[in-house]
Amino acid sequence: MEAASDTSQLVHVVALLGAAVIAVPLFRRLGLGSVLGYLAAGMVIGPFGFGWFARPEAILHVAELGVVMFLFVVGLEMRPSHLWSLRREIFGLGPLQILGCAAALAGVGLLLGLPAPVAFIGAAGFVLTSTAIVMQVLAERGDIATPRGQKMVSILLFEDLLIVPLLALVAFMSPLPDADGAASRLASSAMAVASLVALVVAGLYLLNPLFRLLAASRARELMTAAALLVVLGAALLMEMGGLSMAMGAFLAGVLLSESTFRHELEADIEPFRGLLLGLFFLAVGMSLDLAAVAADWRLVVLAVPAMMIAKALCIYTVARFMRSSHGNALDRAVLMAQGGEFAFVLFAAAESAGIISGGANDSLTAIVVLSMALTPLAMLLVRRATRAADASLDGIDAASGQSGSVLIIGFGRFGQVVSQSLLARDIDVTIIDSDVDMIRNAAGFGFKVYYGDGTRLDVLRASGAGSARAIAVCVDDKHAADRIAALARSAFPQARLLVRAYDRVHALQLAIAGVDYSVRETFESAVLFGEAALRQLDVDPVEAARVTAEVRRLEVERFQLELSAGIGAGVGLMRTNTGAGPSPTPLTAPRRQAQVLNPAGDPGPGTRRPDPAEDDGAPAP
Figure 1 (cartoon, rainbow, N blue to C red):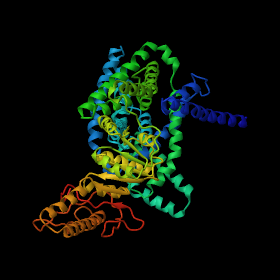
Figure 2 (cartoon, helix red, strand yellow; figure 1 turned 90 degrees about the horizontal axis):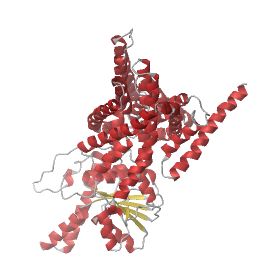
Figure 3 (tube, rainbow, N blue to C red; figure 1 turned 60 degrees about the vertical axis):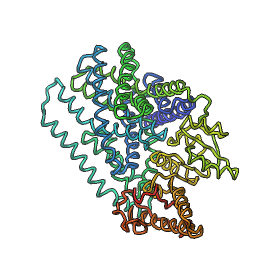
Figure 4 (cartoon, helix red, strand yellow; figure 1 turned 30 degrees about the horizontal axis):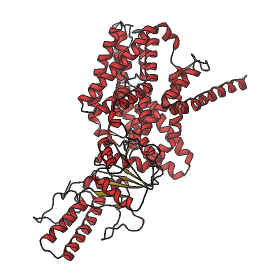
């Protein structure tokens, strides 16, 4: 009997893996995305498909660890200083979107004829977006670290903070007698605060010494076990405090983001994260109760599109109010228009509290699951509709399958000049840009420029970054340049990375980030302009050239001092018309060992080459 039971469990494991292996590649091949593939596979093998699994909620509870691990990895990439910089989005944009959407969704529920308590609970559950779906789509697109991706992450973090107040509100609304009353709710809140404090204290004072001790033992499997212990322990601590497990894992990641073991932890967690996140989507697909849909099909058919459209319109309005572009607002509205996995917990708590009936719980759960399943389809339809409506892209090729030796990103005045030296040596160059008018103008001069957003990882891959020997980032937006540089350094280490810097601080940040070469966009022209001015004043050309070389040498020394000690460290090397330099301003970016350049400005053996250029003639940023 025991052997038969073990075989049955193995059959279930094989069924899960087989469904994923078959469905996900097929759906990605059709352009529908991996999330929809997992959801469809779960529906097929679940209780209302082939019936291979009878209790999807048990799988869902375990698979939630995939979301937990995903948030831990995101936290590792988000240093405390960066998290603090997002406070406006977390506590400004987050509440604005949540309150607006909750009011709109509650109104939709009332219009559909739901009782007021059911409409409110349904709105509260639907307003909380699926962290798993949003994060998976952002990761596939390479958008987690982009400004639009960071805004979505900030909103998701605020939603996780709402879990305790919403559950407390459900308990307060309950018509059932509460033996413990306010004392119980006060104890729950105290437990939540204690859990948060315990996690922060452990992260600040225990985690790094633990990993240093384990690293000294040189036991690779212990580091993996410790990484899992940190993630699962943080999740358990938050769950015991009544908070979100994902929030606990995220905070643990943030507390370890400055650790020297950050990259190793990410590599240890990644395989588990991918498998469990796929299992989560499979379990969500299994959870779709077709019997509940059939029993209340009129409500479900009306509620799913009504609530998704209402939420999307509200999100778009808030995004535009907060000055997001039309494209970013539309992208956020479509991606975050679904309900989330926390709705299942909220609906179950409301049923236990006697606020909603079991039938209402089933119907609301089905509405949320269907919205999660329809989100990838909605994104695909909107993307195709916007592309079809955008007649300006007619005759312009998107980057797809290119394989040049050098990839130039951005073909404005700077990129055009850069291309001439490369083309003069017959080097195979691929050029991408997102400015449609520029692409058409370049075609008139005989250039082939592909349409593509270089800040997206999938576009970089399609443009041939994976096989390029060099990637030249020539865009005039320093934030976009930073994003492209980070993606290229991480995903395409085989390519030499050259980046156009906006100003002096930007060049220092790029050097710290490890780019192979950066140049100020105005430095060389300003140096040559100064030399020409000397010649116009009848200074001997040889002397003018000597002075220019001295300016470059001093700038090299100043740049190296600033790399090691911060902006202003080399102010004594500057010539001023008053004899006094500006007050030093400390550099807040992470320090990096300075690269040593010789007086001629050439890198020494085995060093990278940052450009020690001045920006626009300004002595300080």
